[in-house]
Amino acid sequence: MRNISLIIRRVWKSAFMISALSVLITSGTQAQDAAAGRVIFKEKCTSCHALDRDMTGPALQPLVPTKSEEFLLKWINNAPAFIASGDKEAVEASKFNPNAEMTAFPSLKPDDIKNVLAYIKAGEPKKAGETAGPAAQEEVSNFSLAGVIAIILISIVVLVVLGRAIKMLERLILQKQGFDIVEDEQGGVSLATGIKGLFKNKKFIFFFILCIVAALSTFGWMGMWETGVHTGYQPVQPIKFSHELHAGVNQIDCQYCHSGAFKSKNASIPSLNVCMNCHKAVQARDSHDGNISPEIQKIYNALGYDADKMTYDKSKEKPVEWVRVHNLPDFAYFNHSQHVVVAETAIRKEKGLKPNEPVCFACHGPVDTMEEIYQYSPLTMKWCINCHKATQMDVKGNAFYDKIIEAHEKIKKGEKITPAALGGLECGKCHY
Image 1 (cartoon, one colour):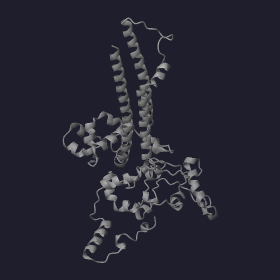
Image 2 (spheres, helix red, strand yellow):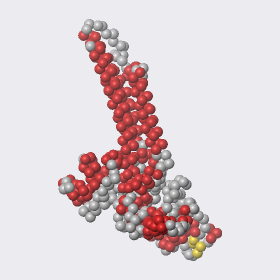
Image 3 (tube, helix red, strand yellow):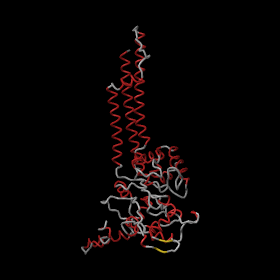
Image 4 (cartoon, one colour):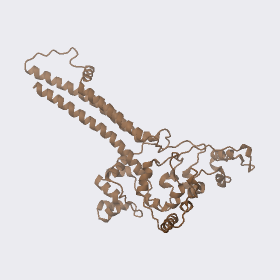
């Protein structure tokens, strides 16, 4: 009987160690999957869907748990074909918004879709007002950290309880066999004594160290993976400019202020003279007890403008020190005009943008809903490459590609060709 109890003890301890370690590793993996799913969701889904509210498509967090994974895999991969197959659940799902068809995403693999679903279920950790370290906070959730600690604590408690239970069974067996049992003055083994004995167990020590190594490795890897990624970065600006008010409510076109996006490498920050085109007259006095809005007054102060006299004093001019939000490394070349003009049609099709939404939304997100601007996309090399792999260019009737084709034809004929014919006069070719 004693041999049986020893076997039970070993089996239970080994089984529990393996199970706890599996849960620990799985929890780290799920956090990684949710992080990858978030990137895909931001790239492909946010033009029509939000986690917690209805848009063109339904709110996803309350909806996803009601659907089977098999259904969601088929629906996200190719909803039009799924509906055409006559599936009742798919046909019913299409009735949410009869005027908008769910976009097919054949390029997404099942694992990619599962990552997106993991992100939807986990939700968005970042709050709108957070500014410090949002990338790390989003990818390494507090829930995962608490789960790791909980698993370690529970494993200790369970092993202690099992150890005491086995000792009690051994005592009962010995009593039935006629052996005298000397009771401890404290009525048995105390919890503190049990824990001390536990840390003398080589198997437990190995399990404990393995848990710590696995946890540190998981969080270390995730931390290094997110180094330099500033998704959600939202610095405080010197003037509280609301994109939601200007681009959303007032429907001002992005390129009215960021005129450089249409014709050059840089989108450019508008000069305050552009602001004054409207705010020389618009002063929001009604909502400030007859006084000029404090934010509009900051524009006047920077320009040395006297609103009462309607005159400028150049001696009082001072620049507005805007804080850059989207900041690519110096070695990365990005040309706004090539994306906004040349690739506009292809990007719109790939991202599923509505006709009334500017192509800027593909990278900068729904700017018309942002009270204060923040970095919407990760802007990593992987993010750019994935978009370049998935976006299908339509070269027919595109002036840029017409020039390229024309240049290639000249090369084939042996005619003279210069860098100017291939865009070599673009300022951004030399001036980064």
